[in-house]
Length: 68
Image (cartoon, rainbow, N blue to C red; front, side):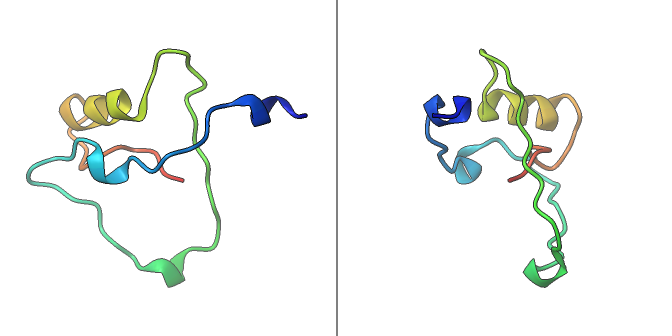
């Protein structure tokens, strides 16, 4: 067994995370994608919700700054 196999299962949180009321990310379409980037915080206390809230409220970004 690898160490990552003991981690909790992933769940799609995208539709439930905080987003900016007046900003949005531009959609370039699926055909423009060539690579997959997987980001993680590797923190015991962080969550997708807490990072999204920070990115929207503090950084004034349209939404969470990480993707999968």
